[in-house]
Image (cartoon, rainbow, N blue to C red):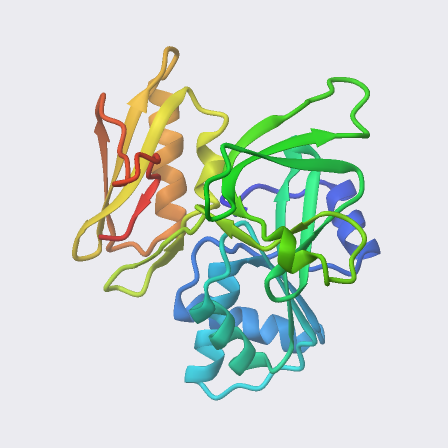
Length: 278
């Protein structure tokens, strides 16, 4: 969670105890925090890790650097594309099975990759592709078969995937299979003072704010700028919340600037950019 100071409810704590889960903030992954997380993993004898691909990667990178061995059996990576580099470091650090997870909960779809290159789509949703090109890549359209309240048919989530139907004919899973998820790679932003930020969690902060677009950019030594295109209703209290959240995730000597703009930052391909490491 971004809001590390927010007190958890009794129901939340009880629910986590029932599931034997330990929830940790995956946004700031400095060496000090990684050291603390390693101690928590050892103390609680945790054998399964679930979280942002970049966060699990940074923890694995720290464990390798410090020559720390952990008894982890499975890593579940989610929210970001698991790059080959991330996978290699995680595998080297933990010597464990890696299950990559792709989900679009607003469209009712989850998919797990038990074998690299094959995401097994759950049975309660149908995946179709829009505008498939000659390379079998297209935009994902989802239909949730169990949503009887507000059914979404061919819901476009904004992700692109690759499906090789010829290759999937010999795969043993009897449901739909996606071979590769494209377009959701988030950078890691590392400042010189040791603050390390990962991108996906900031969507939690901005999704409930009157902000049309934001882009977090590293602009100098220990310095970031958050470019914001405001929507109607943006007030001073929203600015204070943004600044206080950033300060809680970064070290005291970090510099944080807010830049209000009408510009929407885009990649060369035209996709919106929310996180720029430089």
